[in-house]
Amino acid sequence: QVQLVESGGGLVQAGASLRLSCAASGRTFSNSAMGWFRQAPGKEREFVAGISLSGSLTRYSDSVAGRFTISRNNGRNSLYLQMNNLKSEDTAVYYCAGRQLWAISMNRNDYMYWGQGTQVTVSS
Image (cartoon, rainbow, N blue to C red; front, top):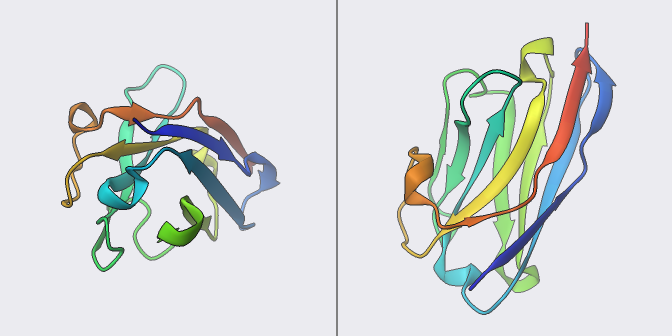
């Protein structure tokens, strides 16, 4: 079992940066591939970035590639999302998620652990 708590969201202007964190409790974090998803009002929850359990593999959606960086620290049971050059279309609630497999998945249905989300609002 893994419990996830996100932090670091806020209100920023376009072009700014934010770093989201996800603190995990439980013994299986280091055995879980992790991901960040987001959900804007009226839209479905979408994949943003994923990282393998070792951190050696990462994957990004086309909309954030080159601007966002996902990382993890298994010793600290933590997941991060560095977001640079934020755009108004990045406004959403951001969720971290985990799955008890090593491989990254872009499908939200493949993740069994979810945090409560943190709001990111980018003003233009």
